[in-house]
Length: 318
Image (cartoon, rainbow, N blue to C red):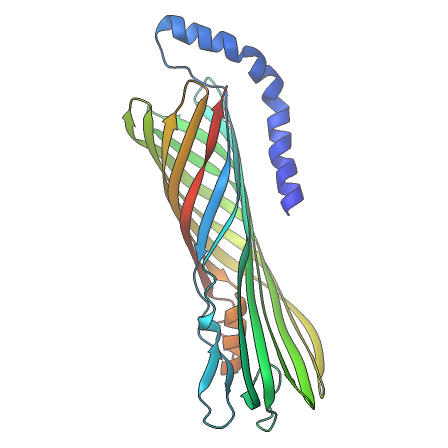
C-alpha cells in the first residue's frame, strides 16, 4: 500500500511538472506587473500528521483465578498518539478546475500490558478451561492506517472549492495474547484488515485572509465498499487453530479540518492545523475479542474508529 501510494503521487507530479516549472517565472512576472496575486499552476506540500486513536470496545482479557476479578481488558489499551507522513500535490488549471492527490499514513499505534501472579491468572483467549491457571500473561494491541485520495476540484467564487473523487483507505489491526506456566502455555492472535474503496464529496473554503496569514477549512464524506479479512490463530499445550474469514459491507468515512497557513513569499508557506476523522462499519481487533466473549458476531462488522490530531508542514507553489 505504501509503495503504490507514493508511486501514484510521484507519477502525478511527473505528468505535469515539466511544463509547470518552465512557465512559473514568466507567470509570476506577469502577475507582478499587473499588480495581481501570483496564481500557481502547482501546489505541493509535505509534512507530518499526528493522530490520536480511540480506544477499543470493552472485552475481558484476563481475570484473577481466585476472586475472578478482572485483571486486563481491551479497553485498558491506550493507543494514544502516533505520527506519520502527509503528502499532497495539486494541479491548478486556468478554467477554475484542479486535480489533487493526497496520501497519509500512521502505522505506530501500539500498546502492551503484562501480568504476573504465579498460578493464579485465567486467560480466556488462550484457554477456556477454568482449571488452566497461568503464572504470567501479556497482550499487545496494534493499529495502522493508510489513506490515498484523488480529487477533482472546481472553484466556486473566490473562497469556495467543491471536491469529488476516489479514496482508498486501509485499516489494519491486531490483538495478541500469550500466557505461560511451567506445565501450560499458549498464544492467541486476532489479525484483521479493512480495505475501503469508494467515492467522496467535499468542500474547501477560505475562512480568513489577513496579509500573509490564511485560514482554510475542509469537509469530506464518502461511502465505501469494505473488503474485510479476519485471521484467528492460536497455539498451546492442548490446542492449535488457524482460521481465516472474509466479509464485505458498506462503510462510511467522514473528515473535517482547519489549517492556518503563513506565506513566507510567493512560493513558500508553512502551515499547521487540526483535523478529525471517523470510520464506521469496520472490523476492529478489540471488537473481535468482545464478539468472542459474548458468543455472538452481531457487532463484529459494526466497529467505529475515531481519530483527531494535528498536521504541520511546508507548501511550495510554482
